[in-house]
Image (cartoon, rainbow, N blue to C red; front, side, top):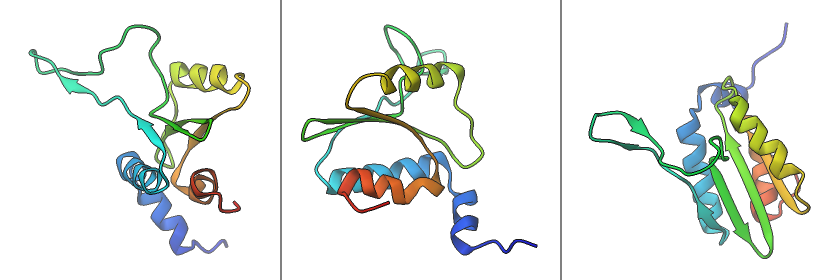
Length: 119
């Protein structure tokens, strides 16, 4: 029988929005420039994110000191859409770009990327 650690329980309970707040807070503290497109409600009451181009751009684009991170955030059980996976794949092919799917269990890696702590 496998014992569940407190961290594993926390990871399972963390929502994508909570993870995003945590990543954004650390990124701001570490001096990263941040882009996140938030959805808005249109006049008909529908939520959408206006864009021109291909959907699925990662949730966060972070830039600092010549580095670009493209992070798609998901709760532990969340799955990226086909469009999101295609963007991560395309961005990963660009030299120097770090494009990742991030879940709560990946927090040590996020810290390493944003503040240089070993993962």
